[in-house]
Image (cartoon, rainbow over all chains, first blue to last red; front, side):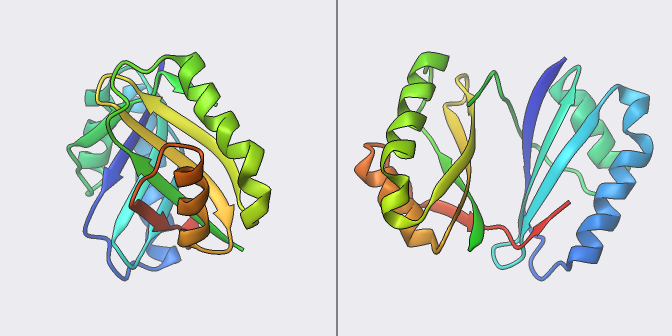
Length: 82
Length: 82
């Protein structure tokens, strides 16, 4: 199992409730790909969202985000954490 | 006190030890600006580092990174976390 950070753009002006809804949509289906979204952070001014997850591959994480309605292609495998 | 994510590029091939050294350099002086670096994650393949911090302002966080020897201009204020 690996750890990932993915980045979304375009979430300008998104509310905390909308972020929670988007995150819940991931959580509902994440197990189907062996993924778990640990946390998500939003900067509504720049529209950036950062999602920290674990899973078997980048592709599995991206498939969940895509099926949940918020695809991204920007994802990084985090091999070190301090 | 606000929460921030900053992003560094160019850390291709950096080792876990080197990331720990860089993080320690931040921790040693962070209190001088009222900043705390909670965590840092590295993808040595793309060379990206993500740092999660708390502090009084983006500028304070960036000043610590600059003084510690690894400046960045890419920083986001995280107003929501889920």
